[in-house]
Amino acid sequence: MTDPVRISIACHGGRGHTARLGEAVRAGASRVPHTEVTSVQVDRITDQDWHRLDDADAIVFGAPTYMGTASSAFHTFAEASARRWLTRRWQDKLAAGFTNSGSMAGDKAGTLGYFATFAAQHGMLWVSLGLAPGWNSSSGSEFDLNRLGFHQGAAAQSPVDDRTGTVHKSDLATAEHLGHRVAKLARTVVAGRRALES
Image (cartoon, rainbow, N blue to C red; front, side, top):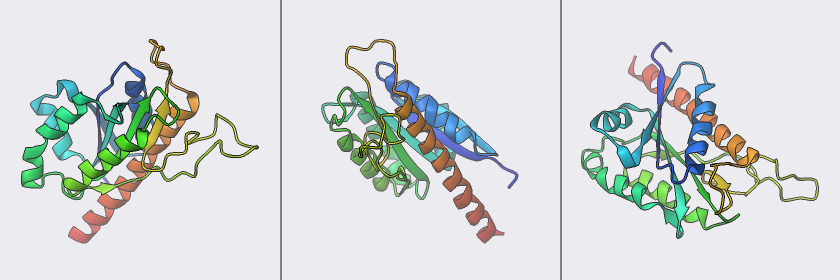
């Protein structure tokens, strides 16, 4: 495969914790050879950013969970994507998601479910986290991957009074796993499409 596989991370960074997760997703995706990863800040999106998303083979959505769903900045971006929906521009791209909240559960499943529905409306193919839950037995540890036990995407917990953007090592490693998984699957899908077209 000569051309790179293109992954875009479309994220609202909130107070910094979710942005750190996005960096971990990027690091994981970048470990896959011949992968080009770009980041788009959805609250400051430009025409060039929209074109990056249009040209991506996979888009990973990220936002903090506020009041049981993604932040309003992400919702604004999602509504602005309606032109892409009308033209089916993102049809059959891979999609995945990540989020952060102040509580261990924090209703993050609502945000991940929202991302999956948003992707489905665009005709995208959802990539789950692909990990068993961690830290759910007496031999487990808070440093297990997927310590919070989510399956639809990568989830993190950060104290609401933290202003440093600190994210638990396990949550960062889980987000990195997600990025790596998306990039590997995107590489497989793109190679398959190119083989069928040749």
